[in-house]
Amino acid sequence: MPLLTSEKSDYTTDSSPTADIVVSDEMLEDFIFCPRLAHLKWAQGEAEPYDSCKDSDKGEPQKTWLMWDAVGVSVGIEKIELSAGESLPVRTHPVTGVETTFIQADALILCLQGLALRANSYLCNSGLVHYTDQEKTIHIDFDNALIARTYDSLFELRKTLMASKTPPPTSDENRCTQCPYAEICMPDEIAFMSTAVSGNLATDEDAVDNAEVRRLVPARDDRIPLYVQTQGAVVSKRD
Image 1 (cartoon, one colour):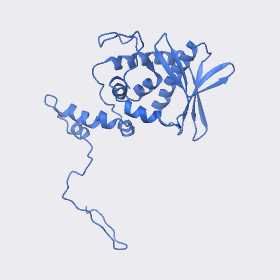
Image 2 (tube, one colour):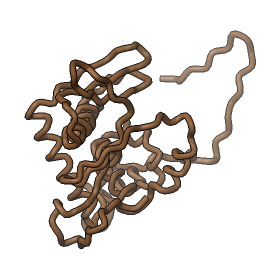
Image 3 (tube, one colour):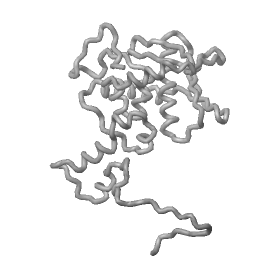
Image 4 (cartoon, one colour):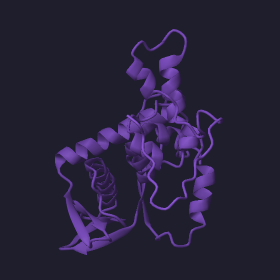
């Protein structure tokens, strides 16, 4: 899906990052996970084949969609809980999050949704993250520091989407192994080329080793497997 724009949007790559681009909470979530993913998916249109599969999944929960016109933001809220006259946006995860980074991402997404609720005349000062595996709920307050980080993240998201150059892959290898866009992003190949291309040759052996592309097939094809079928036999490496 190509980058969303409003009807009156008419920008170029030279315009300000605060140009009239409509962004969504899903875009912000992708950007927090990996700026390169956000650019590939939303600026280059690589999201279409994946989103078409997603839309056909009838198990996807129905969301409440809101527009925050003054800032150019669209949000899809999974669930809204009413508590003491407030409307609290809720995000649900099947497994308890253990990484601080993911908890911070939830805080930013919920804060954006909360600000959109405020813009639509709802009272909202906090949000909830619910983990269904342990029936655990985390309460997140939308304080001034979190609101400021949310605005900063929106600015950086727009700046990234408007850039003509794709951001480099993330240095977090665990995220790359979980990402369905790895075959498009090619993080290993990009890292290898950045250290091995002419004019930028790495002199540190460790740097070259770290940049090696993970092999999809064995390095040598002249080896054959050894099957040990004798009961009680032990195979060990000689020192």
